Length: 332
Image (tube, rainbow, N blue to C red; front, side, top):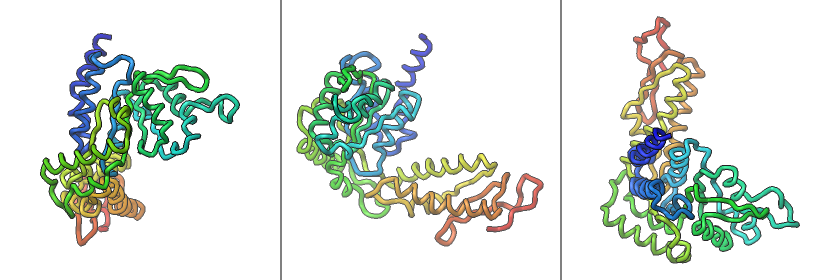
């Protein structure tokens, strides 16, 4: 037991270095979360409240939800430890009761609430409230109780304990302001003081939208950065490695050259939409042609394939000298 505690302590101390390798371009967010979790592990936090409570602000596609999923996997060893609730489903007054269960006499009374039942079944989890600004005020009142007391009572009278959960809320409040942070094209990131002034504007907008009693109960309000070209270089490696890992099961080894990476970044870089266009670019320009090469038989098991950018597209070349005794693959 002592050895397990030492391993967990060491894991928390190395948390930032580990998560920064997976969550690209959001070092401030990772550092803020790491500090809050270390406070909790050292028993310095209020024992009645959740482990941590955060609001993530910033443009779309920069890793807000991905950070929550990564945190769930890091803390609880399972990506399924993320309980994700979309607040666009709770914009009306009558929908608030769905979180803790319908009252007696209403349809679904014995089924339990979508939030309370999920936390009751998995008390050690990350609870993600997506687009929190869309929630009805009655839902916000429920969140106040969770953030302050660490528990709620469901429709069946059971106490649901949130003290072992991490509460994360995402919001697009003021996201339009952040779009202007990155210059057009492949521009380098703007100066730090420009981001600081933009962050202040985002926080001012947040204070206008949310009530003080809600903001005062949060551990951290984190504004995410827009992704730069250097961030996209790391992200294209991560996305491409997923493809390379999957195709390695077919005994095909792919070497992605620098020109291919630059090509994918050129096709998938959009400062307004973050990293999501990069995923589509990998599917369109890498996965689709590679699938055709596999089906045509130009790429076979045991081949080593070099991928480079040639004439506005990716070229797949199998070198003549293969270690196998089989005949060389025909040119693509």
